[in-house]
Length: 100
Image 1 (cartoon, rainbow, N blue to C red):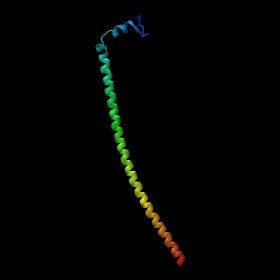
Image 2 (cartoon, rainbow, N blue to C red):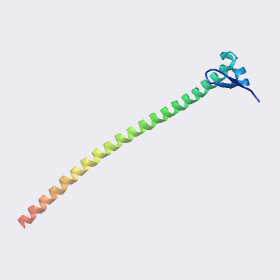
Image 3 (tube, rainbow, N blue to C red):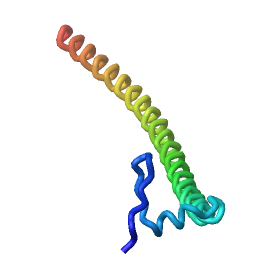
Image 4 (spheres, rainbow, N blue to C red):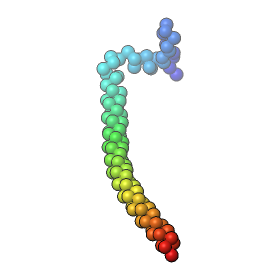
């Protein structure tokens, strides 16, 4: 079992960890830096993929919104035409009623 090495700042390391800690940072930190860089690179790739997907989805949603806006305008125009024809028919029916 490793013995505990006490430090004045209340950090305690096992003797094994203390030996590792005594190596220069470049030797022990290098693998973890490379690992961290690979992890970050993977995460960045994932984020780029998400952004690309969101851009495509956003573009599709804008196209759908434009199509729906055009369809709404067409339906409003048709609705107005039908309203005008119905009002004209009502006017003719009232005229026929008054003359008949």
